[in-house]
Amino acid sequence: MQVETRKYPSEKGEITLLTLTNASGAKVTLCNLGAGIVGVEVPDRNGNMADVVLGYADPTDYYYDGPCAGKVPGRCANRIARGHFSLDGKDYHLAINNGPNALHGGPEGFQNQLWQTELLADNRVRFTYCAKDGEEGYPGNMTATVTYEWTDDCELKLELAAETDAPTVVNLTNHAYFNLAGHDSGSVLNHLLTLDAHLYLPTDDTLIPTGDLVSVKNTPMDFTEPKGLGVDIKSEFPALVYGKGYDNCYVIDGWNKGSLRRAARLEDPASGRVLEVLTTQPGVQIYTGNWLAGCPANKAGRPYEDYEGVAIECQGLPDSINKPQFPSVVLRPDEKYNESIIFKFTHN
Image 1 (cartoon, helix red, strand yellow):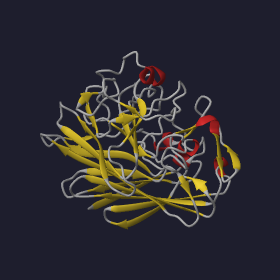
Image 2 (cartoon, helix red, strand yellow):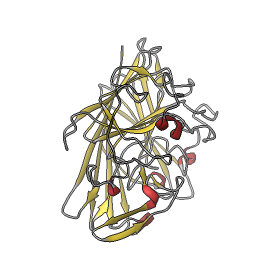
Image 3 (cartoon, helix red, strand yellow):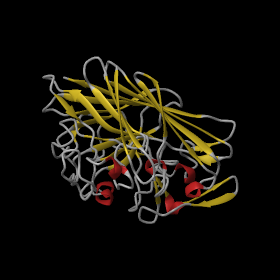
Image 4 (cartoon, helix red, strand yellow):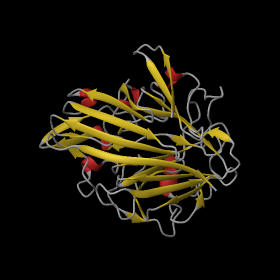
């Protein structure tokens, strides 16, 4: 495994990019800003390499970007209704940064912080961030780590961990956008998506789950068999109207805490590239890049347009802290948060 390190100055400190190259020449580029994935170069069925992760030409553009491209949001990914929750009888109020709701831990969330970087071995990188009590409104001093491993089989393994000194809320994921034809190849709506999920979370018009788990059968939300992302995306169906496309969480079939299961399979028919996603998390948020237009210039020097990438975000269910019927996202001092995600790249 080869490792290349590049450093860039920024107002907050030094941005570090680390590129890991495996035995087949496939590459992953990681960034300490937001503990992010900023590049994945893998072969198609003919052996042609392409970077299949959306990202920016200027590393400083990852600060405060609307899409949260490639980064680890936190300390609580996704939405919390009205930016409010109660924990052990105490109310907490968060920054409102997505309509009337709190999103991805707030404007100064983990995705906009520089994480400490440690190269553990030739193919493993650990990022660490220590959040202070009261940071972005959350209780407890919390230390989060994200460990990446890039294998010779083109598996990118993520281990998400956290500890706290007081009861708090934690929900970590990765927010990479994938376009298996190549990050600068245009729309992703011809990709085929399969989800191992027969239930999804309907939401209100601000994308907060109602609390119900609803069958996808006979609805545009059904990806239990391979289906093009664009087939139903313009349907007059509430979930698709509210988000201008898919921005919805699905419940992974047979989820059992701590058990690794497949959540999704994404395929680009033209190149033959395939991405399988496995996780220990209970949910997977599918976001079809409905608001990518206007983001910073991409790695080829042009802005992305809507629907040019899809995020497959394995996570706890949105607004779980306000939905006691959902799996808990509360972390206490005597507990450890440990979740896994695997992005497995192949071709057919």
